[in-house]
Image (cartoon, rainbow, N blue to C red):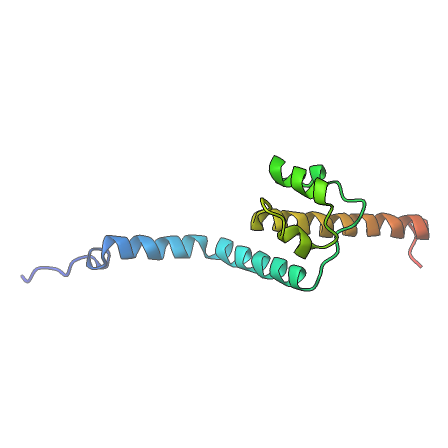
Length: 120
């Protein structure tokens, strides 16, 4: 009898196979990261304002250097924060997410306080 065909996995170079496996495995994560980068770029470009009440030490994930430099400079916008030496793209993303979350939480608390917790 003729020899059976080799397994399809053996026909693909190991490096190519590993590359495809990684891309498939991490596709959702990569897409989420790309979306976050796009949102951060958009926020920076639009002049996203940073609130005066912001405590940089309260932003999860910022490095000690970022907290120190942002606290000293007190930038008014994400664009100004991005221009500070030592503030990383990851720091800008964390700052954006923290401010957006804080505004959502503060807005929700204001709505409850203003409306007495009852729908209009």
